[in-house]
Length: 100
Image (tube, rainbow, N blue to C red; front, side, top):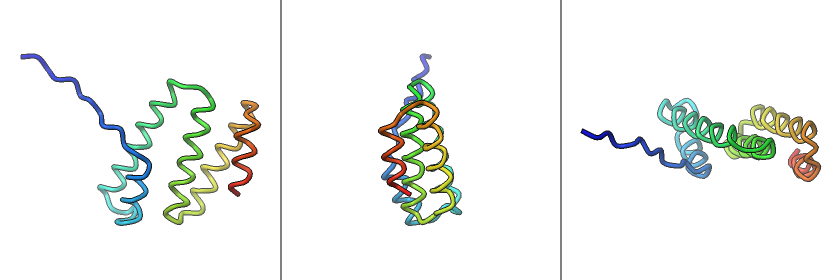
């Protein structure tokens, strides 16, 4: 019998934010969904450029901001800012600075 390939559905950032707002990060299903999105995006950015990784960290920051987690928002934004500086992404650096 032939096995069907495991095709992973692309999780949208908006879905993550919606669930986090509705049920909170302490809900195990929501936490798993958030981790699945994070791992999915990390796999995507691992194949991409440093710019892709910076954008992912900005997206993470936006998720944390949307749910009111200011500490994690700043941590993710700091990561993105540091990466933008290291990779000479001046336009992204300037955009990130405006988010503070």
